[in-house]
Image (cartoon, rainbow, N blue to C red; front, side, top):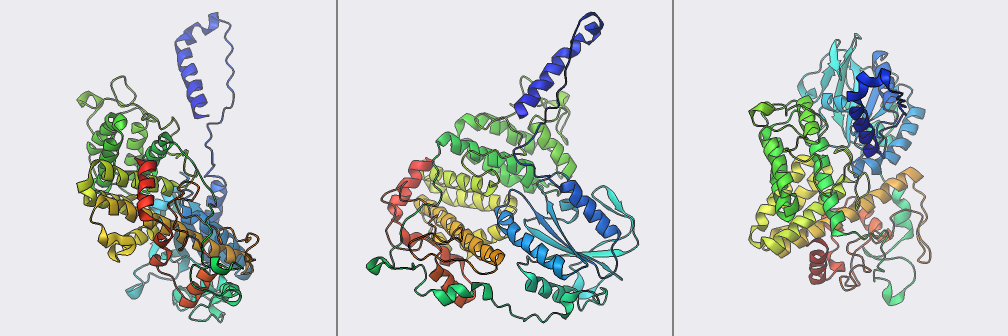
Amino acid sequence: MVALCRGLLRVLLLLLPLLPLLPLLPVYIILANVPCARSVDVCKGAEETLSKFWDTIENAKHGDVMLINIKNYYCPACNRYIDVWNKLEEEISNYESNVSLFVFDCSCPLFVPYCRFFKVRYFPTFRLLHPVYDYMEGKNTDYKYIAPETEMANRKYNKELLLAYREVDRVNNLPQFQRMMQTHLCKNVNFNHIDLKSCYADVPPVEESPEYAMFIATTNGAIGGTTGKGGANANRMAVERWKGKTFTKDDLKHDIMRGMLFTLRRNVSLGLDVEKSTVEPFLVMAKIVSDMYPELAKWLGDLRERLAAQRYPLRYEQWSKVVDELAGMGGSAPVGTASSMGGITPVGSASGMEVIPPDVGSTPWSEPKFKVCEENSVLCSYWLLFHKISVHCLMRDKERYHFYMSALTNYTRNYLNCESCIQHFVTAQESCYYGFCNIHSAESFVIFLWRIHNAVTLRSMYESIVQETQVRGGQPELTDGKRESKIQFLNRDLAFPPEKQCKFCRSGIGFTRITPPFITHAMKQKSVSDLDFDAIDGFSVKQVLNHLVEVYS
């Protein structure tokens, strides 16, 4: 569709020289309404949401509360949470008459100015907004304010009430919401809590987990075990792949580059001003990818040179223009540099950088358009990049594994935009999880990334089961060993590599899936550690290493 739109534009441009001759020629020009659409409409309902938001704050009265879920379509954690949020919104709407909930999706350009205003750095982020009688001092320094005449996203707030907002944690159910109200609002002398029912609710100070009781009541066994009959095989993990995928090395390269370009277009700034230090981890990563893919070295070299030539810091609007020009969407010389007469070749000229690098398609940088990864999983492209780099290190640059580990960590810290993901990645290093403190070779570097990736997958499955249980009201049907559970990821084997892709990689025993006994153990412990999701005991490490080299070399 994008190519069709561009083709139509080229046809119209070719007709321009003929305009003086139109009175002499019987020319018929039919302009069809050709939508230059993307595969996913991330802005669906955005105008209605913003209209409702402004109507709410401009008609707010003391005692009203607004809770904003600031998400991103390309954030897996946000998408896993949305079903919980939808149920929570229904419960709160039925319980509290003066509480409004909103979802701002920062992948939609209409919401980007609001993400900038609320200083969003990670997804999902939550802002609690409400009128107050006066500015709060002392312990309440976490509050920011929308005062009368405040400019917010190119629109002025003209009402007289002072609005306060702060960042709050995610809530999964009504009791958690009530506890949040009691923590931040019910004892706040600047907030009128009279009509807020949550302030009078009897909520236990320590939350119980009755929605998980069925796991504890109906299952027994050690962590990682299975239910049902099986005798000697009861503790043996049946290997099953929930969703297997095959892909070519060109597909792999395509998704790695698409993820990087999308990161440059959307994730580097998040609507914030861009410093030179913000861009440097991307420049380092682009150089590494140039070494991995020599056929892209010239294009990536030009890209790095142009980014390095900018005069930082750049405001968000300037940065967007720079990236648009680099992507071939603009027409003038890059912002912050000398003009094209001063040595910068305009993008799209015969001697300039190609608009789109080879082998990554012609879709805009603002759309990932993956081949291997799901359409909204930029995180998947990060993992492909990381595994590719680790194998490149093993095969081509074995002595510098510490450099590559540092480059991946800096890239993750700066661009992942998922706070919990960054914390898990950094905690694994600080706590020596997954063999991090035993990285003494390129081989151990490869295996560390494989172990943490499997742990992320299994932890995500666990969170999905917990959230689906909450949405269903805590009454899922467990598997009886003969049929599948109706819970989407329960007892599903998603650890990589699956047996059908690597016959000798599995050891036949060990933890590779989330089972009812695992959840039983987790609930009894009240919490789980990242290390609980390490699946290394289910694999032959030597065979896994050989398989990773085969896939990513």
